[in-house]
Length: 243
Image: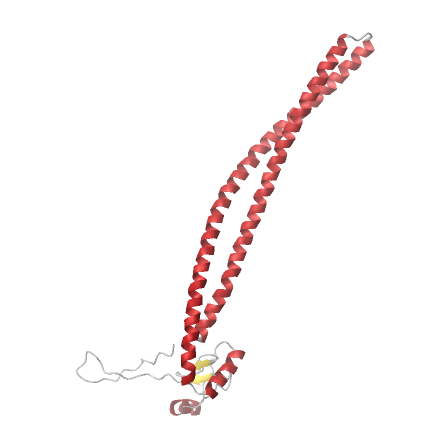
């Protein structure tokens, strides 16, 4: 019962950690999606800014051309033309940058849509796992309570000295008792002396493994009458279930 209870307690303690881990992973993916969205928004803002710059340069060119018509000298005319050429160069740069941004935007938009779909699926999976974990925890807690109640009913049937010895061992090691039926301690595999085995068969006193100091118990084969045969027959190999 104690071993089963320990397994349940371990699982109960592990489930919240598992939930925290998958929630942390989900949060990381959400942050990545938000970062991708921010990059996409920045891309769109820069495209608008480039469009605004192009409009400003076009307006400037229009004014420069009007001023060119009123130029009084060749030098003034050339200056206006140089300014127009400079503005046209700036427009070409902006247009090239807009093309680059559009290509980037297509990839970013595709990445965002893919990430959104994956995140929605992952969120559904996380919610399902969380619900399953809560249900599993409730079942484990119920089983644990039942085990503790059953343990409580058994304690009065056991000698206080045996319970005290068992509890001391339980503080030191997970498995406090060991099957010695086959002549070995099932915990540390030490071969037991014949005298110890003889004592196990004949006494109700607590005996301990000389190596690991666990409480030894003997679970002998049981003879029973054959249900199909005409007469009684001793059958070896059936043992008392100590679980």
